[in-house]
Length: 76
Image 1 (tube, helix red, strand yellow):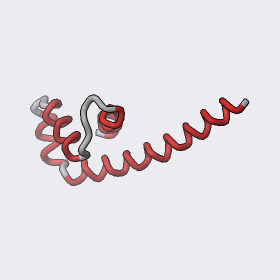
Image 2 (cartoon, rainbow, N blue to C red):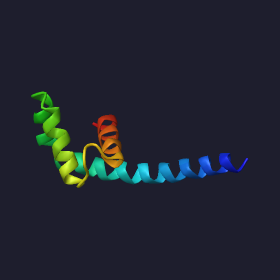
Image 3 (tube, helix red, strand yellow):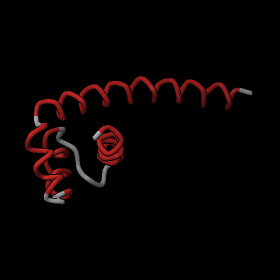
């Protein structure tokens, strides 16, 4: 029973963190909309992702870096 409670708490904590990341990424997209659209039209996704990792000071291979990319892909 206690494992289930821990999982629920962890999910709730994850949801709160996810909401924070989402709002920051939405703001990043809004501020860089033109550049991101131009790069996306040119199919330069690696450049987009590198800019994202640089902006949020995360490594591509880190857990947070992967979450950033997933969230960005979902929003953009």
